Amino acid sequence: MSENRLLKINELVRKYIDEILLRSLQIKTGVFITIAKVDTSADFRYTQVFISVFPEGEFNYAIKTLKKELHLIQKELNRKLHIKPSPRIVFIEDFTELKADKIEKLLKEL
Image (tube, rainbow, N blue to C red; front, side, top):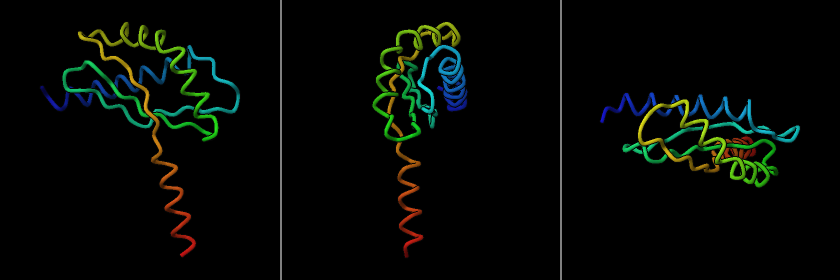
């Protein structure tokens, strides 16, 4: 399997899920969901979508909303990708920015 093909699939999944979230998902005002990274398995059966949420206190709300609408997101992604098997979406929290902020604050204190 070509590594280049996997990178292209990851980018397409990221693009399409971003479009779906913007167009089809009702998120309450002031909550922002960002797709930090997409990692699709080599056999294309699963794709892990790493998300970050601002403000951090709304993460539970965001993940609950994404899980509630997972069927709609999955259906639209499958229709746009045109590959078999279509990867099943798994949303995972991404704390990279939070960890970076904490490290930056610690460095400033030194």
